[in-house]
Length: 135
Image (cartoon, rainbow, N blue to C red; front, side, top):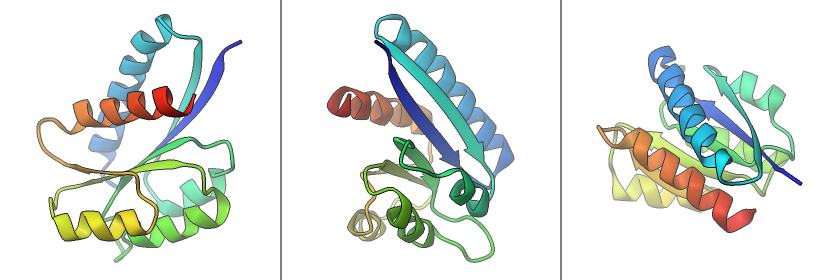
């Protein structure tokens, strides 16, 4: 029996959003060849779209910290916790700040990934670690 993994990407930058979704898809295609894994990746540019599609079946979210209109990942984390407390969330941000990492973790984030040349590699590692641990 295959395991169903639902992953959401929320980043207001269309280029990064598409790139992240593409890279995660490639990683999971390869990963699922050696595992019984069925996956779905949904990408969103706006928090409201994520909220409308967020349910208890969402397992992993990659969440940009700054989302425009003065919305931050902390605002989104609060709403996610109302609908899905079991979701593993990685904050992805250009600001590599230990204090910000601590704050987001206190609101339910599982990881903090700085945006640099290793971001997508770290995101895939986070996904693999989450799948291995939880499924």
